[in-house]
Amino acid sequence: MGNRSITEAEIALIRRMTERNMKNKDIQFLFNRPDRAVNSGRISEIRDKKYGQHVPAATDAEVDAFILSRSSAALQPSISVFVTPPSEPISPPGPLDHNRLRALFEQDEFGVFRLTGGETNMHECKLNFGLKQSHTWVRAIAALANNHGGYIFFGVHDLDTAGKGAANKSHAAIGMTGEAFQKADPAEVTRQIKGVLDPTPTVGTTHLTIGAAIIGVMHVEQHPSRPVIVRSGDGNTLKEGDIFYRYPGRSERIKYSDLRTILDERDKVARTEIMPLIERLLALGPSRAPIADLELGKLQDGKQAIMIDPALLDQIKFIREGEFSEKEGAPALRLIGNVTADGTTVGPTRIVRANVTSDAVLRNFLQGEPVHEPWQYVQHAAHSNREWLPIWYYILAAGVSVDDAIERLKSEPASMPSHRDGAVAQLKGSRNAYKAHGGKPKQLIENFKMGIIAEPPTDSDAHKFALAVQGLPEGVDDLIRFRDLLLLCYERANTGSPRQKNLHSAIFRAACRLDELFYKPKVTKNV
Image 1 (cartoon, rainbow, N blue to C red):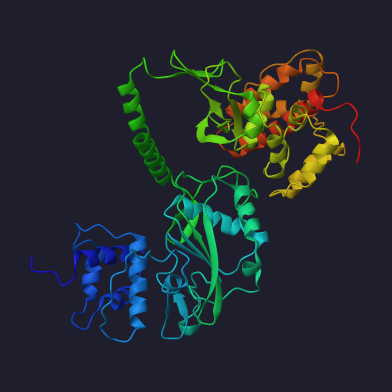
Image 2: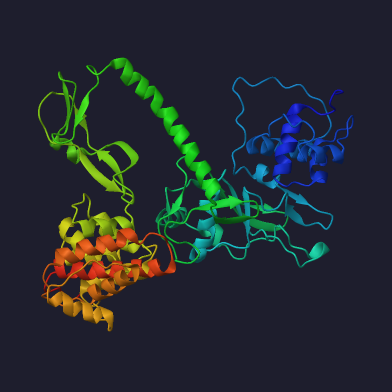
């Protein structure tokens, strides 16, 4: 093979540009020089991996920096100058640098500024921004965070298949209507994201002028602990448990192969991080490795013990926040407290639940499990897409009065205001989970009164059982049995079929009815 007219570094840049669906003519513009022209056919060969196929693609950051450098060079006079190298390295421009962002737009022959390459797996266009329509851009944030990260452009048109010539608005910077983006409180934007997604992606914002249009920009970083999952949503665009992924031109629910890749990468990183620790433990040997006694709250090696002093709990500091689940569906744990190695016997480490989910609220109630920070479970009612959640069990565990609980819930900034208000109504006594049904559920209640409480054999029977529990009157015996059977019904309702979604909803309300019968005060104060 003869000498190449372009370098391997340039091939790497061109390969990544073709992966971003940039047009050949746009790539040519960036690489043509007075002493050398790059043939469009050569770019097509690189695109088809027929030329320089052994050269890996450059990174997106390298491509963006190259485009920016070429755009800046085009504005400078052709004068050679000598510059003394700086004593400190110059940092590349950040993802929200305005020059870098402007370099992503190009003015066409009609004078319209368009996003070069259009919508890709790193770029999404939206006509406008609004806090009330947060589900649309929160979905895009989740999708980008689960892939390589990228940008959401507000005030930039998406693909227009109808317009022709100058009237075509495809990826054109047309500008936002109003000033909702510019005036949005960053704390409110963050709250919207935190209320829906877990873990929370890192997002930066800016706005700038492209031509005569003002556009808003969100930059989303790839999350190091992806996948980012929807913890609560509107039940339509965003549903609890959804995982979104950014594909070229669209954000949609992730495909199995891409989710598998994310999980495999996370496992690889985890193994890489833990292997040095394992090697260190093996080098220490069993005689020098401390053993954790969770019963006594001790970490000891036979000579010295590391303990948690209860007196230090008023000065709580986070030691480590992990992502280790108690069991499938349970919230994560974190250890809280200071440690001391004075060799005296003191209290154990506190284990505190975090990342409360609707599933955890239901399971812990049905299993009768005590929880730390029970108020978080009450507070979750303001952010869950579940209309009915057990609440009295956690109010009692939190040790707060009904009046205090009402005021605290009312002041909670809610991502699901109607569900928060429903929980407040439950506490006020103006709303309860009791609902009498006819047919088979009514017959089951008569059986319950006679002490006949049997496990439902099918999903259909489980649904009727849950409806019957919703209509339980005061005075029915063996409520623990109902709680155990509801848990069994819930455990097997996990395929996501429409019938089992209905079963889930029925179980949540039935659990609320048991919660009322078990823990609701006999007289509540109306406020």
